[in-house]
Length: 347
Image (cartoon, rainbow, N blue to C red; front, top):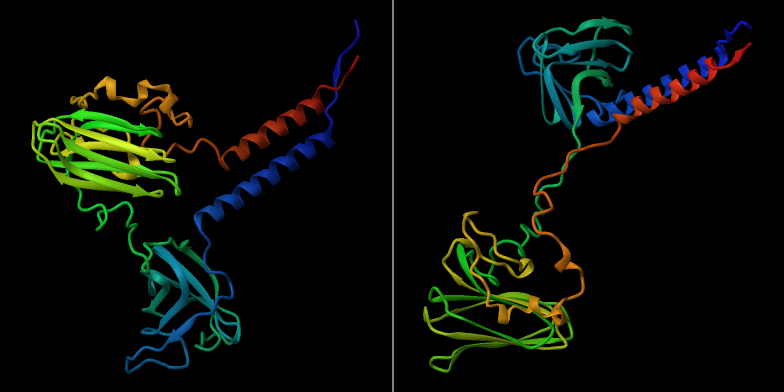
């Protein structure tokens, strides 16, 4: 029987270790970048002398205030090491010989003599002071707040066009498509909302609401172009009304609802099935004869009828990937290389 010997290729193992080291170093760099940068060495430090009677204007001592421009956050016990123009270095630590805070810029209020003084002439002066290093200080990435010029988005909040939020509503009928449609309804309250959205800039849509009991036309408006808005009108509760939509080269959505009810009121840009405030409530059904969804010719053709309701979560999805995969990939790659180095056998 032959003898089997395993040959260990040191060169391949070395390559594997180099791969692991390189990937882990890259991973640590990514983590440091994600955590936020610290003040860079060489950043200028502004020294403001204290006003105490015993304050020396030529050296950094108790009462002086050092500032570093930027946008920073600090942790308790943070420290900063600075260097003056002649190379003297000294350290200030929060709660020991300084109070270190950040309100945008980094502020060091000196309460005692610097520690770990070295280099230069041994005296930490006020001229040419720069940052050497910091601990517990993070450079915060600035976030964009509300635009002070334009203010809040006027299209989503209450404004002069859409009026105030009406609170709860009761749906009456919904018409959509690009052909003339009509619906019959009996309002539950005396306040009617006709919410419309048109899509073709070159088309128009005529909306007529009529009390068929009295033949009174309460709404008769023609909307030109692509726009969305709400028409409000007083109506007689319980009376029979018709709403007729007549488009000309226009695709549209029209929601008719009355103010007062358990459902969220509809906005022009978000016309869909109303969401009840109470999950146990069901929307008022629309007359199937007037429901354009029963007519395939009214399908806008964008696939919206094929989408299952409530399948999109209302919160951010969890982060299932990212830089944490780098060490795993490095270990898998190294295992493969080392495995290749070991399986060379001879008989």
